[in-house]
Amino acid sequence: MTLREMDEAGHEHVAFYRDESTGLRCIVAVYDSRRGPAVGGTRMLDYDDEADALEDALRLSEAMAYKTAAAELPLGGGKAVIVGDPDEKTDDLLRAYGRVVDSYDGRFVTGEDVNIDVADLRVIQETTGNVGGAGGGEGTDVTAAGVVHGLRACFAERGGDDSLDGRRIAVQGVGKVGRALVERLVDEWANVVVADVDEEAVAAVEEEFDVESVAPEAIYDEPCDAFAPCALGGVLNDETISRLECDIVCGSANNQLAARRHADALAERGILYAPDYVVNAGGLVAGVTEMEGGDTAEALERVAAVRDRLESIFETARAEGITPLAAADRFAEARMAEGGESTLF
Ligand code: NAD
Image 1 (cartoon, rainbow, N blue to C red):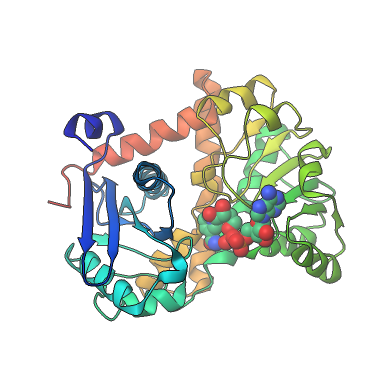
Image 2: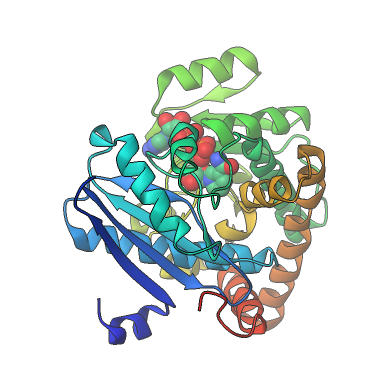
């Protein structure tokens, strides 16, 4: 990567590390650290191409910076990727990676992501203290609570009534967040329809709650008041947006839009899109609350801010004739700029 490419991408810092004795090869990217230490998980993948690994680190660190700024936390955004087959992950490699993290002296703090779980974080912790979430925590339910606050803001924006009672909500993905969301929605008397590629996950949710299910591909065509993507990224794309039969999209998944232009495509279809990085800040809020010595009850209180933030984003979008994504980006960018100078160097 060249400095010119960094100018274009907007990142503060991109570093490549290689350790011969353990086989560690990793990239640490910091998009913005003006508000405070850069936080972001570490993912390990056997990327086909090193360019894909770099692209992932750049895209994910940028999203983290927008997420921390939109939540007005005194943090920046970063991300790390370890390039390699997760089946060949060794404790020595993780300890070497911990030394990389430690070299940032607290200016980059990492946590879980794809193929790096709590057990791995505990090994990484042997060589650095700059790890969050190694205790497990209850971030998942706080994330789900944030989605409920987001849905209320969306319904209020659409019609003034924020009640979930009788609303039909389609939940894509009933993993950790999706299941917790279903529980909260059913408690609020919503009518819930779920889909997941994992049949066992669907069966477990159907057993526990009074919900319907449809095949994974059919969830896009399901008539509903709100669609809540809680599985993978990229689900709002050229193929799916034209099929949606909902008024609102509001869910936990990261990077729901395949591209920025899909925010415009949703608006053109009259669908209200709640920007994912605003809605899904609950996990981050839970992590920060835990690091400050607070408990889950406190994190659940703090995550109510998702609703206030969305309300002001919708107001700006309405007043200025822009999409909620554009309004959210503007808010986050202003908060980053307020941070002053980089805290990384
Ligand atoms: P998870 O892995 O526990 O659950 C994801 C579920 O989606 C799984 O059950 C999986 O089978 C299902 N799935 C995968 N592909 C699917 C498809 N095509 N159609 C339907 N279902 C599919 O993950 P999670 O922790 O519940 O996170 C869900 C999403 O929310 C992710 O995008 C994650 O990045 C995001 N997120 C999670 C948190 C958190 O607190 N865990 C915080 C912020 C954002």
